[in-house]
Image 1: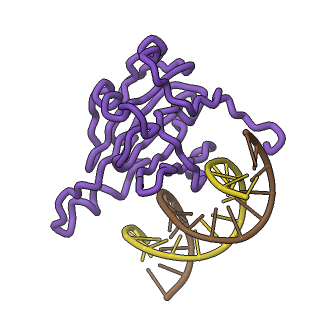
Image 2 (image 1 turned 60 degrees about the vertical axis):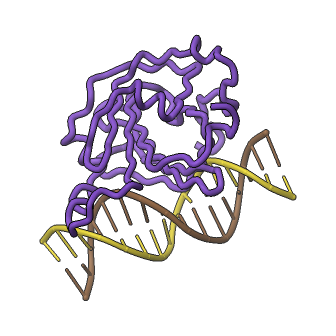
Image 3 (image 1 turned 90 degrees about the vertical axis):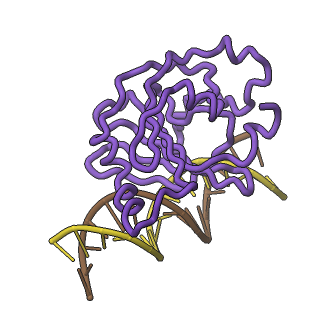
Length: 171
DNA sequence: CGACTTTGACCCGCGC
DNA sequence: GCGCGGGTCAAAGTCG
């Protein structure tokens, strides 16, 4: 896999600066799941608004929300630790998961990410990629993993909040 | 030359 | 106390 890199991404690192973006919204209201504290599901509209997700040439499809039980398997170890010890919810615990049907794993959300790790998920032939915001001072992390049941679906989990605007220009 | 990817090793929490 | 599992770091290598 060294010679043939499957970089299907058209390298859209430059975020759309014009309102053309609105027209390029090929996203079909994907049912994304937002995991907060434990496992919460929010509306994709809110998520997109907060994270300014940019979709250009990617054609996403919506699907039914993932069951909490199934998702918990992937995001375990947060509920028990968070609730116990009398430690209430921490402000820094902002976790949002986004399940999308796409061939590309890395969706362009307007931010630049630097991959810092790859792990093989047990009981799953698909690896899990770990990304981090390249901006100094921004400790936002991102986890990308393919659905074990449906390899056509990609689960992107965001953790943290950006301290700057996407592309540090125009918001 | 600088920024980023890659891959294995290391670390930490938890269960047995 | 050790093993397992998931998460992160860091050196080398690659790309622009």
